[in-house]
Length: 351
Ligand code: NAP
Ligand code: ZN
Image (tube, rainbow, N blue to C red; front, side, top):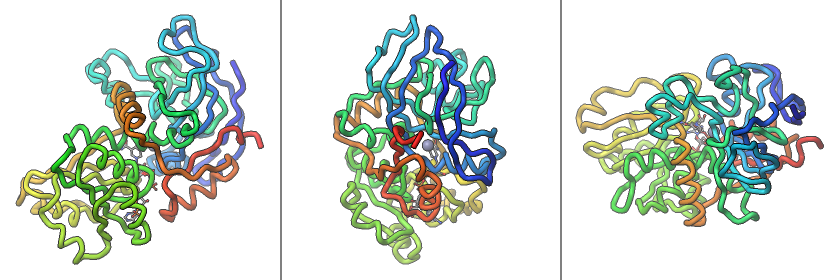
Protein backbone atom coordinates (compact mmCIF):
# COMPACT_ATOMS: atom_id res chain seq x y z
CA UNK A 1 0.00 0.00 0.00
CA UNK A 2 1.08 3.57 -0.65
CA UNK A 3 -0.62 6.77 0.46
CA UNK A 4 -2.02 8.85 -2.41
CA UNK A 5 -2.59 12.57 -2.00
CA UNK A 6 -5.63 13.67 -3.91
CA UNK A 7 -8.67 15.93 -4.19
CA UNK A 8 -12.08 14.42 -3.57
CA UNK A 9 -15.73 15.35 -3.36
CA UNK A 10 -17.25 14.01 -0.13
CA UNK A 11 -20.85 14.47 -1.37
CA UNK A 12 -22.76 15.74 -4.41
CA UNK A 13 -22.99 19.19 -2.90
CA UNK A 14 -19.56 19.73 -1.35
CA UNK A 15 -16.62 21.25 -3.22
CA UNK A 16 -13.57 19.12 -3.95
CA UNK A 17 -10.99 19.27 -1.16
CA UNK A 18 -7.70 17.59 -0.16
CA UNK A 19 -8.02 13.90 0.66
CA UNK A 20 -5.62 11.01 1.06
CA UNK A 21 -6.16 7.28 0.67
CA UNK A 22 -4.31 4.00 0.12
CA UNK A 23 -3.47 2.75 -3.38
CA UNK A 24 -3.02 -1.00 -3.81
CA UNK A 25 0.46 -2.47 -3.87
CA UNK A 26 1.28 -3.18 -7.54
CA UNK A 27 0.69 -6.81 -8.50
CA UNK A 28 2.87 -8.68 -11.01
CA UNK A 29 0.85 -7.26 -13.92
CA UNK A 30 0.55 -3.67 -12.64
CA UNK A 31 2.25 -0.42 -13.57
CA UNK A 32 2.68 2.27 -10.87
CA UNK A 33 2.56 5.79 -12.29
CA UNK A 34 3.49 9.16 -10.79
CA UNK A 35 0.86 11.49 -12.26
CA UNK A 36 2.25 14.66 -13.88
CA UNK A 37 -0.92 16.13 -15.42
CA UNK A 38 -4.64 15.37 -15.33
CA UNK A 39 -7.22 16.97 -17.65
CA UNK A 40 -10.59 18.17 -16.34
CA UNK A 41 -13.47 16.54 -18.24
CA UNK A 42 -17.12 17.57 -17.95
CA UNK A 43 -17.74 13.93 -16.94
CA UNK A 44 -15.71 14.62 -13.77
CA UNK A 45 -18.23 17.31 -12.82
CA UNK A 46 -21.28 15.19 -13.80
CA UNK A 47 -19.93 12.40 -11.56
CA UNK A 48 -18.72 14.45 -8.57
CA UNK A 49 -22.17 16.05 -8.40
CA UNK A 50 -24.06 12.74 -8.91
CA UNK A 51 -25.70 14.06 -12.10
CA UNK A 52 -25.59 10.58 -13.65
CA UNK A 53 -27.10 8.92 -10.57
CA UNK A 54 -25.59 8.55 -7.12
CA UNK A 55 -21.79 8.47 -7.10
CA UNK A 56 -19.77 6.64 -4.42
CA UNK A 57 -18.08 9.06 -2.02
CA UNK A 58 -15.35 10.03 -1.43
CA UNK A 59 -15.15 10.58 -5.21
CA UNK A 60 -11.75 11.33 -6.78
CA UNK A 61 -12.40 12.21 -10.46
CA UNK A 62 -9.85 12.49 -13.26
CA UNK A 63 -9.43 10.27 -16.34
CA UNK A 64 -7.09 12.22 -18.58
CA UNK A 65 -3.83 11.12 -16.98
CA UNK A 66 -0.25 11.52 -18.15
CA UNK A 67 2.56 10.41 -15.88
CA UNK A 68 5.88 8.68 -15.46
CA UNK A 69 6.26 4.99 -14.58
CA UNK A 70 7.72 4.59 -11.09
CA UNK A 71 7.56 0.78 -10.74
CA UNK A 72 6.46 -2.25 -12.75
CA UNK A 73 5.35 -5.72 -11.67
CA UNK A 74 7.39 -8.81 -12.56
CA UNK A 75 5.11 -9.80 -15.48
CA UNK A 76 4.98 -6.34 -17.07
CA UNK A 77 6.73 -6.40 -20.44
CA UNK A 78 5.60 -3.31 -22.32
CA UNK A 79 6.68 -0.60 -19.84
CA UNK A 80 9.75 0.20 -17.77
CA UNK A 81 10.53 2.65 -14.98
CA UNK A 82 10.84 6.20 -16.38
CA UNK A 83 8.50 5.72 -19.38
CA UNK A 84 5.98 8.50 -20.07
CA UNK A 85 2.53 6.93 -20.20
CA UNK A 86 -1.15 7.75 -20.35
CA UNK A 87 -4.26 6.37 -18.65
CA UNK A 88 -7.74 7.23 -19.90
CA UNK A 89 -11.28 6.43 -18.80
CA UNK A 90 -10.81 2.68 -18.15
CA UNK A 91 -8.43 0.73 -15.93
CA UNK A 92 -9.79 -2.80 -16.44
CA UNK A 93 -12.56 -4.93 -17.97
CA UNK A 94 -13.61 -8.59 -17.71
CA UNK A 95 -11.15 -9.75 -20.43
CA UNK A 96 -13.28 -12.69 -21.56
CA UNK A 97 -16.44 -11.37 -23.27
CA UNK A 98 -16.75 -10.77 -27.01
CA UNK A 99 -16.37 -6.96 -26.89
CA UNK A 100 -13.18 -7.37 -24.78
CA UNK A 101 -11.85 -9.92 -27.28
CA UNK A 102 -12.62 -7.46 -30.07
CA UNK A 103 -10.69 -4.62 -28.41
CA UNK A 104 -13.91 -2.83 -27.45
CA UNK A 105 -13.32 -2.95 -23.70
CA UNK A 106 -15.47 0.15 -23.19
CA UNK A 107 -18.48 -1.96 -24.19
CA UNK A 108 -17.48 -4.94 -21.97
CA UNK A 109 -20.57 -7.14 -21.43
CA UNK A 110 -19.72 -7.45 -17.75
CA UNK A 111 -19.01 -3.78 -17.22
CA UNK A 112 -15.66 -2.12 -17.76
CA UNK A 113 -13.88 -0.67 -14.75
CA UNK A 114 -13.86 3.10 -15.09
CA UNK A 115 -10.88 5.04 -13.78
CA UNK A 116 -13.08 6.56 -11.08
CA UNK A 117 -16.48 5.94 -9.48
CA UNK A 118 -16.43 2.36 -10.74
CA UNK A 119 -15.65 -1.07 -9.32
CA UNK A 120 -12.41 -3.03 -9.51
CA UNK A 121 -12.99 -6.36 -11.31
CA UNK A 122 -12.19 -8.68 -8.38
CA UNK A 123 -12.34 -6.71 -5.13
CA UNK A 124 -15.27 -4.52 -6.35
CA UNK A 125 -13.57 -1.65 -4.49
CA UNK A 126 -14.54 1.84 -5.66
CA UNK A 127 -11.97 3.25 -8.10
CA UNK A 128 -10.35 6.62 -7.38
CA UNK A 129 -9.05 8.63 -10.31
CA UNK A 130 -6.40 10.99 -11.57
CA UNK A 131 -6.79 14.02 -9.32
CA UNK A 132 -4.06 12.33 -7.26
CA UNK A 133 -0.29 12.11 -7.19
CA UNK A 134 -0.02 8.47 -8.32
CA UNK A 135 -2.07 5.55 -9.59
CA UNK A 136 -1.64 1.79 -10.06
CA UNK A 137 -3.05 0.34 -13.30
CA UNK A 138 -3.18 -3.07 -15.00
CA UNK A 139 -0.57 -2.99 -17.81
CA UNK A 140 -3.11 -3.60 -20.57
CA UNK A 141 -4.86 -0.30 -19.81
CA UNK A 142 -1.68 1.82 -19.86
CA UNK A 143 -0.82 3.70 -23.07
CA UNK A 144 2.51 4.75 -24.57
CA UNK A 145 2.93 8.51 -25.06
CA UNK A 146 5.25 9.49 -27.93
CA UNK A 147 4.75 13.27 -27.92
CA UNK A 148 7.59 15.62 -26.88
CA UNK A 149 7.99 15.99 -23.11
CA UNK A 150 7.30 19.74 -23.40
CA UNK A 151 3.77 18.94 -24.62
CA UNK A 152 2.75 16.49 -21.93
CA UNK A 153 0.19 18.71 -20.17
CA UNK A 154 -1.52 19.27 -23.53
CA UNK A 155 -1.44 15.52 -24.28
CA UNK A 156 -3.46 14.64 -21.16
CA UNK A 157 -6.87 15.61 -22.67
CA UNK A 158 -6.28 13.21 -25.58
CA UNK A 159 -6.89 10.35 -23.11
CA UNK A 160 -10.61 11.17 -23.00
CA UNK A 161 -11.54 14.15 -25.20
CA UNK A 162 -9.22 12.89 -27.95
CA UNK A 163 -10.38 9.27 -28.08
CA UNK A 164 -14.07 10.13 -27.57
CA UNK A 165 -14.01 12.22 -30.75
CA UNK A 166 -11.49 10.12 -32.73
CA UNK A 167 -13.42 6.86 -32.31
CA UNK A 168 -16.76 7.98 -33.85
CA UNK A 169 -14.99 9.99 -36.57
CA UNK A 170 -13.21 6.76 -37.57
CA UNK A 171 -16.26 4.52 -37.04
CA UNK A 172 -18.27 6.67 -39.48
CA UNK A 173 -15.24 6.86 -41.83
CA UNK A 174 -14.91 10.62 -41.89
CA UNK A 175 -12.42 11.81 -44.50
CA UNK A 176 -11.79 13.94 -47.56
CA UNK A 177 -14.94 15.04 -49.39
CA UNK A 178 -17.10 14.85 -46.24
CA UNK A 179 -18.87 17.81 -44.71
CA UNK A 180 -18.66 17.22 -40.95
CA UNK A 181 -20.27 19.22 -38.16
CA UNK A 182 -18.95 19.42 -34.61
CA UNK A 183 -21.51 20.69 -32.08
CA UNK A 184 -20.02 22.60 -29.11
CA UNK A 185 -16.51 24.01 -28.80
CA UNK A 186 -15.51 22.69 -25.39
CA UNK A 187 -12.97 20.04 -24.41
CA UNK A 188 -14.40 17.33 -26.66
CA UNK A 189 -15.52 19.68 -29.42
CA UNK A 190 -12.17 21.37 -29.95
CA UNK A 191 -10.49 17.97 -30.25
CA UNK A 192 -13.23 16.92 -32.67
CA UNK A 193 -12.50 19.96 -34.85
CA UNK A 194 -8.75 19.25 -34.88
CA UNK A 195 -9.06 15.53 -35.56
CA UNK A 196 -11.80 15.81 -38.22
CA UNK A 197 -9.70 18.44 -40.01
CA UNK A 198 -6.61 16.20 -39.80
CA UNK A 199 -8.67 13.36 -41.32
CA UNK A 200 -9.31 15.63 -44.32
CA UNK A 201 -12.97 16.57 -43.78
CA UNK A 202 -14.56 19.97 -44.40
CA UNK A 203 -15.32 20.91 -40.78
CA UNK A 204 -18.13 23.18 -39.63
CA UNK A 205 -18.43 24.21 -35.97
CA UNK A 206 -21.90 24.67 -34.47
CA UNK A 207 -21.62 26.85 -31.38
CA UNK A 208 -23.79 28.80 -28.98
CA UNK A 209 -20.83 31.15 -28.36
CA UNK A 210 -20.24 33.54 -31.30
CA UNK A 211 -17.04 34.71 -29.58
CA UNK A 212 -15.43 31.30 -30.26
CA UNK A 213 -15.62 31.68 -34.08
CA UNK A 214 -12.05 32.90 -34.62
CA UNK A 215 -10.65 30.09 -32.46
CA UNK A 216 -12.69 27.50 -34.35
CA UNK A 217 -11.21 28.63 -37.66
CA UNK A 218 -7.70 28.59 -36.17
CA UNK A 219 -8.29 25.04 -34.87
CA UNK A 220 -9.25 23.79 -38.34
CA UNK A 221 -12.93 24.56 -38.98
CA UNK A 222 -13.78 26.03 -42.38
CA UNK A 223 -17.12 27.52 -41.28
CA UNK A 224 -18.82 28.49 -38.03
CA UNK A 225 -22.59 28.40 -37.51
CA UNK A 226 -24.21 30.00 -34.45
CA UNK A 227 -26.76 27.35 -33.57
CA UNK A 228 -29.07 29.81 -31.77
CA UNK A 229 -29.70 31.58 -35.12
CA UNK A 230 -32.57 29.74 -36.89
CA UNK A 231 -31.78 31.29 -40.28
CA UNK A 232 -28.13 30.23 -40.07
CA UNK A 233 -29.27 26.71 -39.18
CA UNK A 234 -31.80 26.64 -42.03
CA UNK A 235 -29.04 27.57 -44.48
CA UNK A 236 -27.25 24.31 -43.55
CA UNK A 237 -30.27 22.03 -44.24
CA UNK A 238 -29.58 18.68 -45.98
CA UNK A 239 -25.87 19.29 -46.34
CA UNK A 240 -23.90 17.24 -43.76
CA UNK A 241 -22.53 13.71 -44.07
CA UNK A 242 -21.85 13.44 -40.34
CA UNK A 243 -22.35 15.50 -37.18
CA UNK A 244 -20.67 14.85 -33.82
CA UNK A 245 -22.64 16.36 -30.93
CA UNK A 246 -20.56 17.05 -27.79
CA UNK A 247 -23.00 19.25 -25.86
CA UNK A 248 -23.25 18.54 -22.12
CA UNK A 249 -26.82 19.81 -21.59
CA UNK A 250 -30.22 18.70 -22.95
CA UNK A 251 -31.19 20.59 -26.13
CA UNK A 252 -33.36 20.35 -29.26
CA UNK A 253 -31.68 17.88 -31.65
CA UNK A 254 -34.04 18.56 -34.58
CA UNK A 255 -32.22 21.54 -36.14
CA UNK A 256 -29.02 19.44 -36.26
CA UNK A 257 -30.80 16.37 -37.68
CA UNK A 258 -32.31 18.65 -40.36
CA UNK A 259 -28.78 19.67 -41.36
CA UNK A 260 -27.92 16.03 -42.27
CA UNK A 261 -28.24 14.96 -45.89
CA UNK A 262 -29.82 11.69 -47.07
CA UNK A 263 -28.37 8.80 -45.01
CA UNK A 264 -26.41 11.23 -42.81
CA UNK A 265 -25.65 10.35 -39.18
CA UNK A 266 -25.50 12.44 -36.02
CA UNK A 267 -23.60 10.74 -33.20
CA UNK A 268 -24.11 11.90 -29.63
CA UNK A 269 -21.13 11.83 -27.31
CA UNK A 270 -22.28 14.60 -24.95
CA UNK A 271 -23.92 12.93 -21.95
CA UNK A 272 -26.26 15.29 -20.06
CA UNK A 273 -27.73 13.98 -16.84
CA UNK A 274 -31.30 14.46 -18.10
CA UNK A 275 -32.71 13.53 -21.55
CA UNK A 276 -32.84 15.66 -24.67
CA UNK A 277 -36.37 16.48 -25.87
CA UNK A 278 -37.33 13.61 -28.23
CA UNK A 279 -36.36 14.24 -31.83
CA UNK A 280 -39.24 14.60 -34.32
CA UNK A 281 -39.76 11.32 -36.19
CA UNK A 282 -40.15 12.97 -39.59
CA UNK A 283 -36.73 14.60 -39.36
CA UNK A 284 -35.32 11.05 -39.35
CA UNK A 285 -37.77 9.30 -41.70
CA UNK A 286 -37.77 11.77 -44.56
CA UNK A 287 -34.06 11.51 -45.34
CA UNK A 288 -33.29 8.08 -43.80
CA UNK A 289 -31.17 9.92 -41.23
CA UNK A 290 -29.57 8.17 -38.25
CA UNK A 291 -29.08 9.19 -34.65
CA UNK A 292 -26.32 7.27 -32.88
CA UNK A 293 -24.15 7.27 -29.76
CA UNK A 294 -20.55 6.42 -28.94
CA UNK A 295 -18.53 5.93 -25.77
CA UNK A 296 -14.78 6.71 -25.55
CA UNK A 297 -12.76 4.06 -27.50
CA UNK A 298 -11.02 0.73 -26.90
CA UNK A 299 -7.44 0.46 -25.70
CA UNK A 300 -5.94 -0.41 -29.11
CA UNK A 301 -7.84 2.46 -30.71
CA UNK A 302 -6.72 4.83 -27.94
CA UNK A 303 -3.10 3.93 -28.70
CA UNK A 304 -3.82 4.43 -32.43
CA UNK A 305 -5.30 7.89 -31.64
CA UNK A 306 -2.28 8.88 -29.50
CA UNK A 307 0.09 7.82 -32.29
CA UNK A 308 -2.04 9.62 -34.92
CA UNK A 309 -1.97 12.81 -32.83
CA UNK A 310 1.80 12.53 -32.25
CA UNK A 311 2.35 12.11 -36.02
CA UNK A 312 0.08 15.04 -36.90
CA UNK A 313 1.36 17.33 -34.13
CA UNK A 314 -2.07 17.38 -32.46
CA UNK A 315 -2.42 18.27 -28.79
CA UNK A 316 -5.17 19.97 -26.80
CA UNK A 317 -5.39 23.76 -26.31
CA UNK A 318 -5.14 23.96 -22.55
CA UNK A 319 -5.33 26.26 -19.57
CA UNK A 320 -3.04 24.81 -16.89
CA UNK A 321 -4.38 25.11 -13.34
CA UNK A 322 -3.25 24.27 -9.83
CA UNK A 323 -5.20 21.57 -8.00
CA UNK A 324 -6.69 24.12 -5.60
CA UNK A 325 -8.34 25.90 -8.56
CA UNK A 326 -10.49 22.88 -9.44
CA UNK A 327 -13.79 24.16 -8.03
CA UNK A 328 -13.42 27.46 -9.86
CA UNK A 329 -12.60 25.51 -13.05
CA UNK A 330 -15.86 23.54 -12.67
CA UNK A 331 -17.86 26.78 -12.42
CA UNK A 332 -16.18 28.16 -15.52
CA UNK A 333 -16.85 24.90 -17.38
CA UNK A 334 -20.55 25.30 -16.59
CA UNK A 335 -20.44 28.76 -18.21
CA UNK A 336 -18.75 27.33 -21.39
CA UNK A 337 -15.76 29.45 -20.41
CA UNK A 338 -12.92 27.01 -21.10
CA UNK A 339 -10.20 27.50 -23.70
CA UNK A 340 -10.42 24.60 -24.28
CA UNK A 341 -9.44 22.20 -21.53
CA UNK A 342 -8.28 22.78 -17.96
CA UNK A 343 -5.33 20.56 -17.03
CA UNK A 344 -4.21 20.18 -13.43
CA UNK A 345 -0.47 20.37 -12.71
CA UNK A 346 -0.42 17.46 -10.29
CA UNK A 347 2.74 18.65 -8.55
CA UNK A 348 0.42 21.17 -6.84
CA UNK A 349 -1.84 18.58 -5.20
CA UNK A 350 -0.28 19.06 -1.72
CA UNK A 351 0.15 22.87 -1.86
P1 NAP B 1 -17.32 21.11 -22.04
O1 NAP B 1 -15.87 21.40 -22.17
O2 NAP B 1 -18.09 21.76 -20.95
O3 NAP B 1 -17.99 21.44 -23.47
C1 NAP B 1 -19.36 21.38 -23.72
C2 NAP B 1 -19.72 22.45 -24.76
O4 NAP B 1 -21.13 22.37 -24.99
C3 NAP B 1 -19.52 23.87 -24.31
O5 NAP B 1 -18.21 24.34 -24.44
C4 NAP B 1 -20.47 24.63 -25.21
O6 NAP B 1 -19.88 24.90 -26.48
C5 NAP B 1 -21.59 23.63 -25.42
N1 NAP B 1 -22.74 24.05 -24.62
C6 NAP B 1 -22.75 24.35 -23.32
N2 NAP B 1 -23.98 24.74 -22.93
C7 NAP B 1 -24.74 24.65 -24.01
C8 NAP B 1 -26.11 24.90 -24.26
N3 NAP B 1 -26.93 25.35 -23.29
N4 NAP B 1 -26.60 24.68 -25.50
C9 NAP B 1 -25.77 24.25 -26.45
N5 NAP B 1 -24.45 24.02 -26.29
C10 NAP B 1 -23.96 24.21 -25.08
O7 NAP B 1 -17.56 19.56 -21.84
P2 NAP B 1 -16.71 18.30 -22.40
O8 NAP B 1 -15.71 17.91 -21.37
O9 NAP B 1 -16.31 18.56 -23.80
O10 NAP B 1 -17.84 17.16 -22.35
C11 NAP B 1 -19.00 17.27 -23.14
C12 NAP B 1 -19.97 16.17 -22.80
O11 NAP B 1 -19.46 14.93 -23.27
C13 NAP B 1 -20.23 15.98 -21.31
O12 NAP B 1 -21.60 15.66 -21.13
C14 NAP B 1 -19.36 14.78 -20.97
O13 NAP B 1 -19.81 14.07 -19.84
C15 NAP B 1 -19.53 13.98 -22.22
N6 NAP B 1 -18.50 12.95 -22.44
C16 NAP B 1 -18.89 11.82 -23.06
C17 NAP B 1 -17.96 10.84 -23.36
C18 NAP B 1 -18.38 9.61 -24.09
O14 NAP B 1 -17.65 8.62 -24.04
N7 NAP B 1 -19.48 9.63 -24.79
C19 NAP B 1 -16.63 11.01 -22.97
C20 NAP B 1 -16.27 12.20 -22.36
C21 NAP B 1 -17.20 13.18 -22.11
P3 NAP B 1 -20.23 26.26 -27.28
O15 NAP B 1 -19.85 27.37 -26.33
O16 NAP B 1 -19.37 26.16 -28.46
O17 NAP B 1 -21.69 26.21 -27.58
ZN1 ZN C 1 -13.87 12.40 -19.95
